[in-house]
Amino acid sequence: MLSVAFAGVYVLLGKGKVERKSFVAVVGDVGGTNFRLKLIRVHLETNESETLKELTKYKANDFYSMALGIIKFLEDFEEGGPDWPSVGVVGCAGEIKDNSVFAVNLPVRWPKPEGDKIG
Image (cartoon, rainbow, N blue to C red):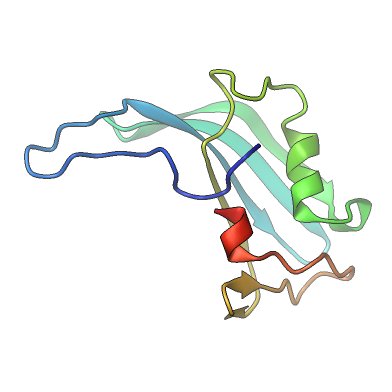
């Protein structure tokens, strides 16, 4: 299962030694009618990233929830494989209240995500 959080990224402080050399992330943005997702590998030693799947645009009305959109986006990747994300960062306009965000700009109403269940 994809955990949309900053899980699995470890940097040892003090001497600046990196415990993991890279991680894979889903990054995206939720707009009023569309949402966009991209899959990248971030290299911690060089602070550079490489694209694993190009920016893909979906219509928000085509999905009951953001989670279903992410599942569709990742359908070509093996869960737990080397290109499976351990991090997800998605920007979404809306108020954060009680560890949840409600997308105010969507014409459809996706279920309210609960922060404890995401991370």
